Length: 104
Image 1 (spheres, rainbow, N blue to C red):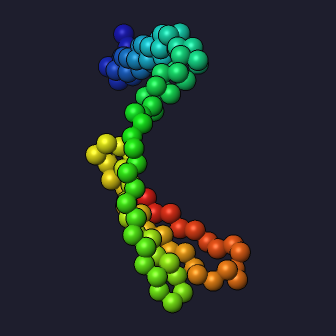
Image 2: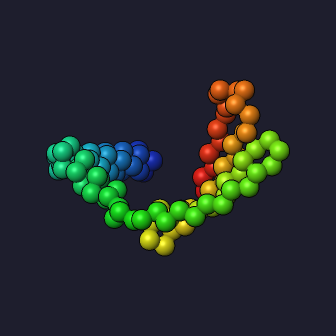
């Protein structure tokens, strides 16, 4: 007769093996049901499609001694107003300048 400790360990290993087998079968079943890449690509593309909206931009310009400041907004969707703020140097001495884009 086996001792109770040994029987308990055997049950634990048997349970672990059973759980592992069930998970393996579930994963292989999911893997077998994958959709074609073209269908996934087309469905994802359809999710990203947005209706075209007139941006209706509104921009005001202000001049200081060194920069032109343009402040305003445009619509990215029918009820989604996107603010903008642009600083342009008045001097043409520097050809390349850094750009900072802030999104929220």
